[in-house]
Length: 144
Image (cartoon, rainbow, N blue to C red; front, side, top):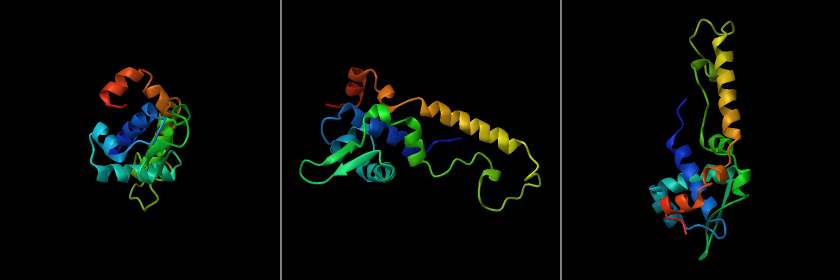
């Protein structure tokens, strides 16, 4: 399985917001700290907002902030919000497949168990866990 850049950057954005929970974080500051364009940042923020992970505040003192404490947002929450599919093989999809073993193959159940194990690990880690060394991450992400 390969996670997309949207997920990678989405986690970085949430780490930045976790370091600055006191006030909304400006789009330009987040984009600069995470080394992404503001345009791509907006694409990342949409699914995170839809999933109830972040909220955007409009206006002069607006920006982006977490909807709930960072210790209540798991890495799995982010992955599920930003990834479009978790197909590990053709037989995971909903479209017609050409494999003659469909319905009689044990491989799909092996893949499903692997995916469930992957999800179980991601569920154990919160965004807060990722920024435990706050002083280091504040320095790396130039967070205030």
